[in-house]
Image 1 (spheres, helix red, strand yellow):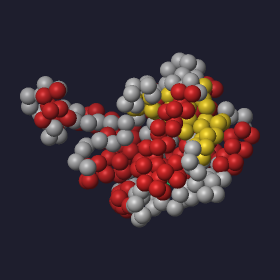
Image 2: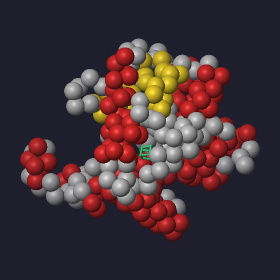
Image 3: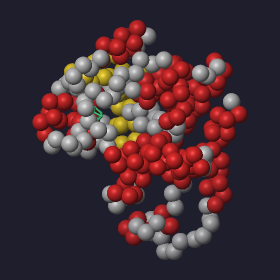
Image 4: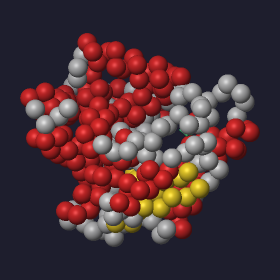
Length: 286
Ligand code: SF4
């Protein structure tokens, strides 16, 4: 249980990391109406909470509408989320779209539903964003989601890519933003528990969480026991990419690279590393 001071410090750290990501990737512009996808999990509650408080003090004016999709999972307790959000005066909408039946029908027994389920959900969010006149859609993915995705792509899909902080849909009509990409999951977990957000269970669909994702998460967790700044270091690395030290010939051509040079960016790398580790240090001293 954290003290009020520790909680305030944690909130500040999360808000600062979020603001930095918003600034770095120009996620929010004057007049934006942002659809915040709220699933009832710790990440999206935290995202909505931090964005709502940013909206009150940010120099740019923007508004939020929190959206939850009831996907038809048996026993879905969406009313809990609705009561909480409306009780706090938030603009909250709930939509019912039975993707559960579709996924059950299409996905073979024993396979995970998540990929089809989330694709369907994304399509529905796009449609709702248009209906509600929203210019952006905010999702609650955090640093650890980004790192797991990076390693999954590296090990299993032959691509060196993580999760984009800002993404435009294929039809060019929707911009998705991920303001928590610099925030550590552990910070979010502690914050959400202290805020006593009424978390909705996420296993109602009966699907197994993607096994590979679980394995990579565990791997990172195990490594971090030995190297406490491992995830912070990995985030710093993602913020400091050196294309000349990778083997993508097409990228070399695109950047008109003739030859790689050693160590030209060491100083910048060290600075980024210090920046990434600083929150961990302040957490420990707090
Ligand atoms: S855990 Fe269930 S609800 Fe969540 S994405 Fe996977 S199938 Fe969909």
